[in-house]
Image (cartoon, rainbow, N blue to C red; front, top):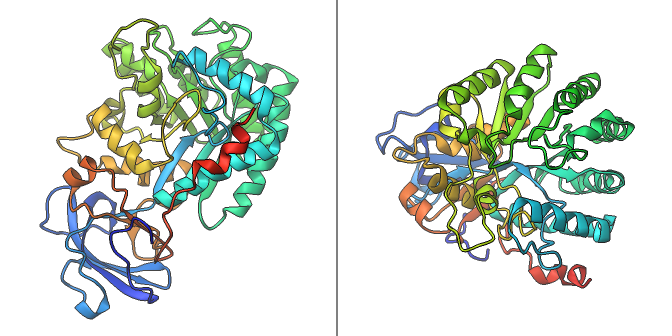
Length: 444
C-alpha cells in the first residue's frame, strides 16, 4: 500500500513478532524488560481480531515477520472535532486568526453554502482522511442554529450508516447556550435524540455575545440539564474557551450537575481560562468536576493557534491549554482531540490523531516521563465515548497502526507518514483523498 514501510502477510492467521507497544495499553499487563513505557511483544492476528499477545520471542518464526522493534498502537480515537466545518478555509479564510474572526467567517460560510451536499462531501472527505491515518472512532459537533440542524443531522445519520464498520461516528449539537431557553432549543434536543446524539452547546450567549459569563448562564444550564435528562442524553459542552479569567462556567456546570442529580455522561471541552485562575480556584473547580463525574478534553493545536493573538506584531504569551496534568492527577478522565481542520477556527490540520498527540506532548509537556499519556488519544477518549476501543487485548479487532519508529523518541520526532494501518488485520490503502476533490465546492 502507498507509503507503508512493510506489507504484512494476507493470511487470516499470522503474527507480528518483536514489536513494541505502550505498556499501559496492553491488557492484561505483561512483565517485559524493554523500558517503563513500552513492552516488547508478539501479537497474533486471527480472522480480523487479536487472538493472543505474548512477550516478544514466544511465537514461532513461521507465524509471521520479525518487525525489528517497530511500534504498534491500537486505532486512535478523536472525541472532539467539527466535520461539518472542515475544509472551508479556501473559500472562507479568517484573516484575523482569532476566535471572533473565526465565528464571523463560519457564520458567513454556513449561511451561504452549507446545503446537504456541501456538508456531506466535506464530512466524507474528513472521514476518508482520518481513516487513512488510523482513526477508528470520531465524535463530531454539528453547528445547530436553525435551520442548519435540520440539514446537517440527517446528513450525519446517512454518513454514519455508510461508514459503519470503518469509523464509529458519534454526534453532538453545538449552539449558543441561551437557545435552550426557547422552543428552538427544545426542538434541537429532539433532533439530537432522534439522531442518537449528545446534547451540546457553548457556554456563551447569543443574547449577550460580549459577556464571558452571560447573566442567563445559570437559567440556561438548568434548562440544558432538564432537556438532556428528559431524553436520556449525555452532554458534550464547549466551556470557557477564553483568555479571560472571568470565564468560570466550568464550576457552574459541575455544581448544576450535582444539584440536579444528572445521570448521564458530561464531557467539557477546552476550559482554557481555568489555566489563568488562582491555584485555589483551580483546585476547587477540579474537585467540583470530580464530584460531578465530568470528563475533560483539551484541544491543544487549535487553542494554541487561536488564543492570545494580537493584531500587531506581538508574540503570544501563553499556550492556550487547560490544566490537564492537575486534572489527571486528581482522577479526572482527560483526553486530547483534533478539533477543527482547515476552517476559520484552525487553518491547518489533517484529521490525524497521531499528529495531535505528538503536538500535545510538546504543547502540554506530556513527557519526561511520557508514562501513560498515550491513553489520552486512545483508551480514555474511547471510554468517554462509551465504546470498547483504544487498547491491545485478545479478542479486540485487529485495527492497528504499525510504525517504523521503535520508541517514543523516534515516533515523536518524525511524522510517521509511512505508517501501516491495519483494519481487521489487513493493511489498507493509506493514500489520502486529494484536496482537488473539493475544488468545485470552493468556487463561490
